[in-house]
Amino acid sequence: MQVTKHIQEAKGTLVSFEILPPLKGKTIQSIFEHLDPLMETKPSFINVTYHRSEHVYKKRPDGTFEKVEVRKRPGTVGICAAIMNRYRIDAIPHIICGGFTKQETEDALIDLAFLGIDNVLVLRGDAARNEVMFEPETGGNKYAIDLLKQVVHLNNGEYLEDDIRNGGRTNFCIGVAGYPEKHFESPNLEADLTYLKAKVDAGADYITTQMFFDNQKYFDFVKRCREAGIMVPVIPGLKPITSKKQLNVLPRTFHVDIPLELSNEISKSKTDAACEQVGAEWLLQQSKELKAAGVPVLHYYTLGKPELVLQVVRQLI
Ligand code: FAD
Image (cartoon, rainbow, N blue to C red; front, side, top):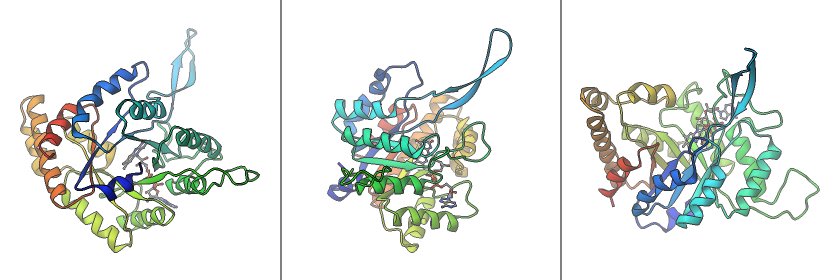
């Protein structure tokens, strides 16, 4: 079922999760072990991230180096199919511009449609490790909006080969990313919102936000969206802080602020367990306030900590 339909039919705030494919070499069992306990919260959908391949240099026996392409976390589409099969709930693959030609994207979208997947989260993706700025694949999409337009074309039965007449229509509900604290490459929030509005005008059905730790940032962002004429649901993305290391890693990786009160409490924690407790309590308070404000969905980035997220969600439902 489409995310927008889940939201329309909901009697209150829904719950959903985002998971990462496991590192190559692990089995699907690791995903089931992660998700099985979370099923008691009756999530409406599970997002599965997509990870592009990277170039690494491997040493040959003669001491010279060879450049090889490695995908550390393959399996997004297979995991979506496995989730739908095991739990009978919607799985949402993330699809990205980086590393794909438009032709490869079209083929991937056809696979997703054949699997009965009704939703996609459309993203540009970050620059590859060896790139300073994001570089699209030759013949690929440059911005998320370009990829989004390709999905919209397919929803209208328009394929890249223009000799396909009366092409079958896909029916993807399309999500896009939004950044309450601005996308890190954007000169300012106004410019970022202009591009976000363009994505919605081009057919995005809903927005999922980057994680944030201060709800006021989300409330302000939604207000700015509405003032800019962006009227689609804005799903808040939430993540627990679980270690002192994350006080530096999260701002560096995701370009988000951590409120002073939270960073102080985490810094004071004497053990890992104490850090997790502070993170869980903060997440619970964030979730309660967002739920009271009537957000459509609470979307949790579980990132290897399903037990902690479960502990929080149990207290909400
Ligand atoms: P875009 O919408 O293309 O925007 C990128 C930048 O370009 C922004 O600064 C924007 O303001 C600007 N811009 C947009 N359109 C134009 C234009 N026409 N002209 C000029 N500038 C423009 N990454 C992954 O690799 N895999 C994932 O699974 C993944 N999941 C994510 C899930 C969520 C909820 C979020 C918030 C992010 C996720 N990301 C993922 C990260 C995301 O790919 C990066 O943040 C990326 O840098 C930007 O993606 P975007 O879709 O927002 O890009």
